[in-house]
Length: 368
Ligand SMILES: *Cc1c(COP(=O)(O)O)cnc(C)c1O
Image 1 (cartoon, rainbow, N blue to C red):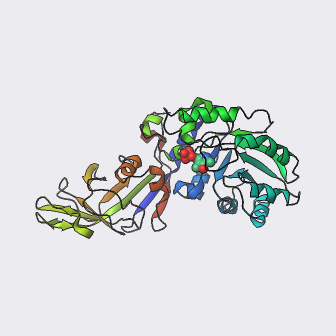
Image 2 (image 1 turned 180 degrees about the vertical axis):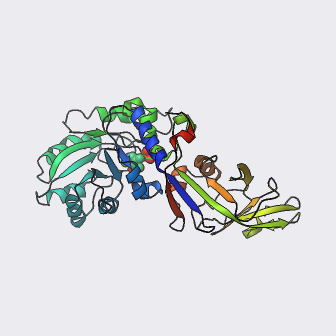
Image 3 (image 1 turned 90 degrees about the vertical axis):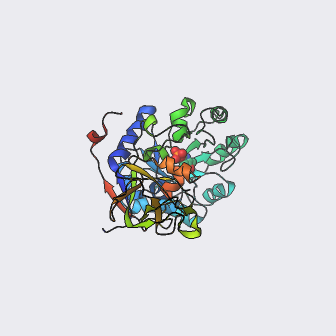
């Protein structure tokens, strides 16, 4: 396997985090959200580990078809629905449930035949102003859809815009607007993402749609995964490929952003933005070697980055470096790079070797 960067994906942690969802909202069915290649963890691995979910949600029809190709027989929800007749036909053949969020999608359904009708989730915009129909349009749309032979079941959903901030009144307003749409008899309803279901009891109704928490990341800026009872799933690591001795005043890497304050060891790690390590990480961003935090020194390159190794003067080529994972939360690296954990996890590239593991529960002690 050499010195190439690796991402281990802990299936036991995925199962643990799913149990955490069940514990937060007992008795509620859920779509495990595994879009964007399972938030960068590998869709096949994630789908296998989360087989106790009631169904899987993905953004696009291509992702749903890939899951069917992998032999996944569970209910699948396509969060963006379909945009042409060919995709609609494929979705029907594959038995996918479809979100319907704009008029063109309604026309597609109405102009298609009645063979293998689909379950539809009408999306209402309760305040995010991204996808969905206005609340005032819902009753008329529901009537049209109920009469449409291509539709076998009609459901209602919305998406929360600010649930990651527990103090923001927007979430309660969105839930109240959604609750008012109770005059039409929808079969099922769905509101909550991870932040909703952990932080806003009023959103914990009907089908839950957790994503980020399944991967062991807190959806709240102000709390940690551990505080939410979640276990990180991805451990991203690389190796030291060179250790240099630099003199005081020498500058390291492109643009010479980092200047050595004294004669010191500088280690070169074989990982860069070409693997998904964020180029915007500043000097001082921590990397973990032998359990010690060492600061990033200089700009991240495509295939390499450098660290100030003064804390480990005997550091050797080949030693393992944790980029994020055990002992170094991805949330912390995201903050150092001015982004969110979602983006870092999704951004691991195809050059990184993925290794599914199943770590003993006992190694983590109690914790739900
Ligand atoms: C991505 C997504 C989710 C999951 O959100 P998390 O914040 O990752 O829990 C739920 N619903 C919709 C519509 C989404 O697009």
